Length: 279
Image (tube, rainbow, N blue to C red; front, side, top):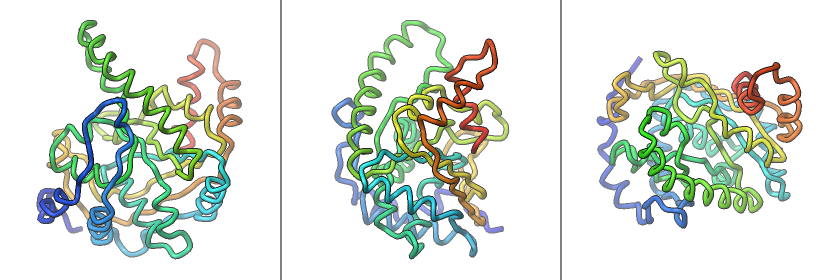
């Protein structure tokens, strides 16, 4: 297996940086940020290089139907597993390269992204800013904070941003965009079992979407580094098989999951746990 340190593939970073002309400040009136078509192609070439032959999307019929419903004005959501910072670029590239799907469907995808990806390092920021996205302030950011004053200060920033992000998402989902969310809110890291747990806010997404696909991801071309430093992640060649579930109705799924909540358990967390079980 070929292994490459991620910094070794950044010989085109200067060119990618020059292709970014947007306003990337985090504020409520700037939660929707447009990507860079030239950069998406550069990143797509990276994905082509490290995905082994046979990499594919399975059950593409469901994805085609989801896009058809999106174009008809129905709200559509993809809930995906999350193992690496290349998960979305690989999904995008596989769609783009498949003549049964194609660039039109790829361009309809609109991921929800946490602010951390742009704050972690300038190089990671260049990659993440290259795709259209809606920015949120992830709830997980508060998990390790104990100081009430610090939490209050962060909420003054996070609440307006997240409220604006929800308004933006509602607008985009009714205007031709398929929203993509990683329910865990972070990459799964085997040494941290809690990274597999879904965030509670996902129950709200299910309530507001007509159609939902669960996306399983098998393979990982950019496994997280134990250090937590994203620039130390190593690129590896791997067979990538992404599998779409059949389409389910979001509200019906939420209602069924809620009705099966064990006594004494938080219904909202139970709904999210059911999502992670499906994935």
